[in-house]
Image (cartoon, rainbow, N blue to C red; front, side):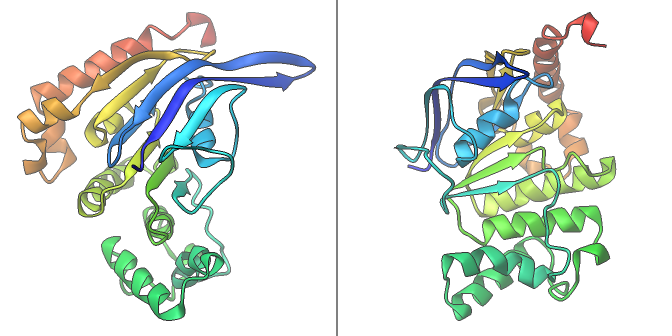
Length: 265
């Protein structure tokens, strides 16, 4: 199973000669083909959770496993999409998407087939020869997502992937990600500060406390979404008008507001 399991994970960092606890006994699971969003105050350890699932950082105690195996390093079963698009500016769209396939030794014919499929999936047909500077921010992020999907990973790890986009482009990208996810289901851990984004995209939302980060509550979105058939709506604004959506957004926002210290402002 392509699931992600954080089991009693704590993470301590050392800074200026002192230890400080960033994560405190965090446990949650992203089940196979489930989209889990993680929200919480700045500095609560959201990104650290994702980086540990990616094999880029490691817990001080507890375990992080993917597909039943303890994560010890990055692997081709997991693809990461960051907030900054991280494209090679000197490479074309085709070459950027090809990069990971070359490192895996995928044969040329298969690589071309995969690239063609995923560029079509992300509505990037006709831009194969374009360079990143010739693309809008939204199109660059589509390339980054295509580069992740082309590896055919079991798990997709996304760290505020739309955080650098303007509001209108961000909305379009949310709709695109939902469309792509329905066509090509993956297990997804999605880090975000945006409550509306989390409710719109996720099956479940993990709400974290302020540092040291712990689980405040896990809110189940999918039963309500399925009961009211949110999928019948093509646009996010139609879903956002639903009473059920507003109630879920308000519930999560209240949980987050409890974590804000007036002294932080």
